[in-house]
Image (cartoon, rainbow, N blue to C red):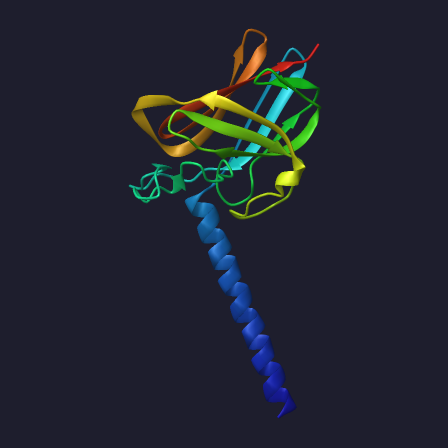
Length: 183
């Protein structure tokens, strides 16, 4: 009797392990890892993130439109793990001072602007909202509408006037956050 219980428990653990591995692989293959990093004049900005695809869905819009990321609601700026951003030195993030370090980055989408927030809570997985008491910086950036839709969510970086623009693009939405080394 004891042996049957042990075999049953071992079988259950194996089945759960295989199921977890499959679901984890499936999530990662639907939203593969991406990284952008750029160094300009001694300033390095690095962003690892996950890259979901549109796959025929409404991405940004109202809840009535069944948007994946409704206006006014938390978005982790990707999928899977929460997106994190690292600055190797003190910066101006959209003209606001920010200390060197690694921060969780998230957004609150809107039709004409996105609120971008940097938070000190790191290493989070899933679409769970952060502890807002750990928010360090909040800023707003305008949204640009693109005529050519971007299927897979992309964060890129570009050198601009000795600083770095962080460019976020997905579906028909694009927004840019300028980063410069603080003096």
